[in-house]
Length: 266
Picture 1: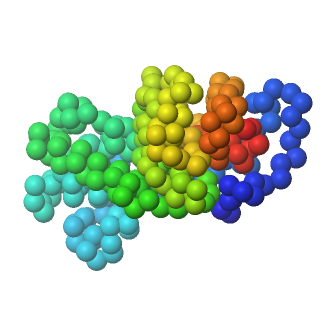
Picture 2: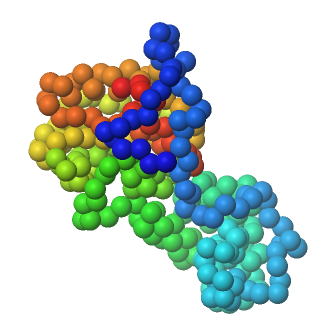
């Protein structure tokens, strides 16, 4: 159920202990992945349907009904031939069936796969980039942000695939309409440094009425750390000084997320 920023649910947890102890599994929400849900175990060519080619199945049933291997087969094919499924299988198996790793693979890594040439590697990267841009929001649209689900729909499909931790701030006007978003910091594999002035400077410059904080956990687990909680509370204190409300701090994992607002940690 979508929750409004103005009506957080009632949480029965006490605040008497370590803040981490207050976290419950019920308040972790699911993100819709970019691809349909499929078993991402290693694929063997003999297990693939031979009656119809991927391109024909796409036309007949639609792209959303194709498996990951079939979609990759279309991307890596020079033309409609019998080798494209085998090449797609090798490509997927190289990354142990994990689309997240394939999504972020470099050109050099793609070229290590037999059957993938330079142009095809570029096509794969371009295809994934188009998916990422389509799944993310268009800054010119200035959508209204009224719930945590709205935020996750906008930035989740992009941030869930990142291998480094990124901290972003969404700037909103007085009607909760997006002005723009700003990347505050890009960190290492599991941490990023955030200073309050870097969070509020773009908000002040844009005359934002409120902001939403978002960062990802490359581990895939969106559970807030003690450092996340302390940082959020520090930024909330600073927000009172500059009179810019922080509506939520959302942590993006792989296929799920956590809201500090809904967990009553801010």
